[in-house]
Image (cartoon, rainbow, N blue to C red; front, top):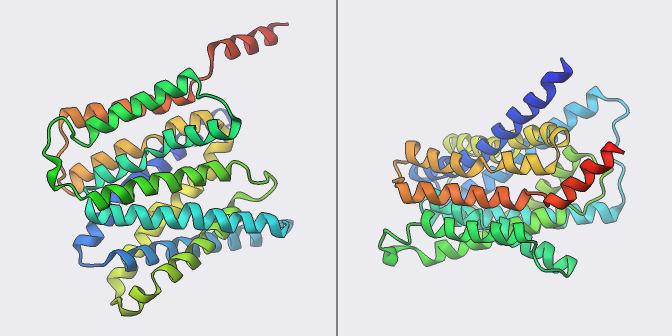
Length: 310
């Protein structure tokens, strides 16, 4: 492949992966409308996603004879812990929120992970958030107020438990990003995801075991599970695994924000959920907040430019 085309392909794949995550909410709501329960769908989503990742890993190992999964037991333990605290809890809480709220509101609540992650990073570094980070939090909070319809809707009928689960999913999602960035870099990304997903599957199975024993199953549930597992795990992971190393974390994070408008648009067209001008403005403000969080200080950028000239 032409080297000049690789960045373009990386950008397209990261955008596609983010859009896939965005579609997940609308597809999950459609599966609920088809008569399937939250527990069964959550289990099938994690199960099929895990199987896809291990199948992908098996293909890679077969093609590359020198492929190695060598890692310390501590590294595997960390992966398993992140899989439980980040992947499984986020999936459980987010799906519970989607069962009680509109898909567009669910994704807006999930996106609160951005400012929560900023807060966690500031606490870890023992510093106040940077001005760009403070601006990001302000944009995200204001955008959320507009996106959930606080200025134009009667929220008396809003499911409080659904909002609670949505915010919990944002917190656990932020834990996933916070701790994943501190894993050893020498671990293969496909193996990382497969191990995390396996730990997530084990936790979901234990958490939902009583409900799963009375859940009715069928080919339709398997079909929804395959679609959810593909959209929420396998496809976006493949896209991100290729694109992010070639683009860098900052640009990839900006492109990854495509998840939010994709979810809102999918909810509008697939579910018939309303989309007002105020809600659209709220989504734009949240995206602006994400961009502000990724903005590098001007002084640092100028310093690097000066160094390159000497």
